Image (cartoon, rainbow, N blue to C red; front, side):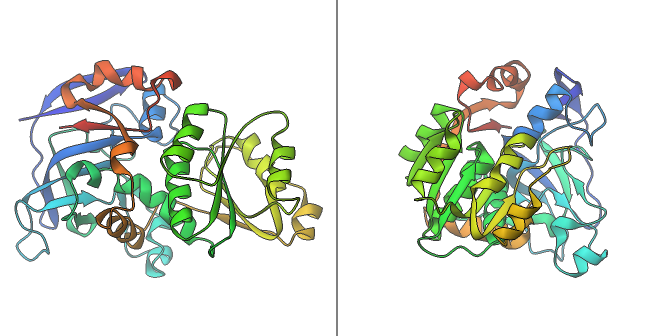
Length: 337
C-alpha cells in the first residue's frame, strides 16, 4: 500500500491509503520523491480547472527513482528520473510533425488522469527521462521551467533584444530566465512587489515595472517610444493579454504563454501597422526538457531560490490552503513524498 493525497472535491484534500499501482508492459513504476505544486493544482483545489473530474490525485511536476522498468527500456531500477506529464498519442498529425505538445488526444497527469502526489506512479516509459547530475528536488522543477523555455523557443531572440514578460509568477519567471540566458534585455511587469523583487534581485533582470494606471507610459519611456521586440504574456488574465498587444514594437512578436477561457480582442489596424507576429505557446516538448536539464547541470538556474516552500506529503492537505494566499510568497512549493 502507499500514501496518496486526493482532491476529493473543490477545497477538500485527503490523505488516503491506496494499492501500489501495477505497471503495464511498456510502463515504468516510479517511486515518487518530489512533486512541485503549480497553478494548475491550485485551480483544481479551487474548483476552477475546467478539464477535470473529481476525485483526482493532482501533481504533474514530479521526480523520483525507477522502481521497475521494462527489460528493454533505457531505464533501470534506481535511476533518478523526471516525468513529462503530457501523454501524447504519437500517431496524430501533430505528433507525426514532432509537435507532441499539440497532440489531439493529449492527456495530462494530475488533470485527465491521476498524477504524482502519491508514493508510487506508473507512466509509459517514453515519458520518463533520466535526471542524473541534479538533485531530485531540482528535477521536480524541470516541467514548469520547460514551459518557459518552450515559449522562448517559439520566437527568435538575439542578444540585446528588448523583451517584456507580463506576469512574474513561476511561468513568467521561467520565461524571463531563458530569455535572459539568450542575452535579451528583459523587463518584468507584475502587480506584486515581491515577485518584481525576485526578478530583479535573483534573476538579475534589467528592469521591473509594477502595474499602475501609468504602466503604458512607463514602458514607452523605458523603450524610448519603440516598445518591445518580443512580449510574453504569462498572466492568465484576458484584460492583461489584450493590453499586451500595445506593448509590441514595429515588426515585433507577441507570445501568449498563458491560456484563458475567453475571447481575446485586439486592434487589427494596429496589428497590421506594426506587422506584428502573434504566437501561442503550449506546454513543452522533450527538447525543452533537455534544454532545462542542461541549464541546471551548468548551474544556470537558481533552483535553491526558486524553491521557496517545502512540505511532506502527509502535511499537504493542511498546508496547501496557506500556500495559495499571495502573502505566503510562494514561487515554487515542493512536496517530499
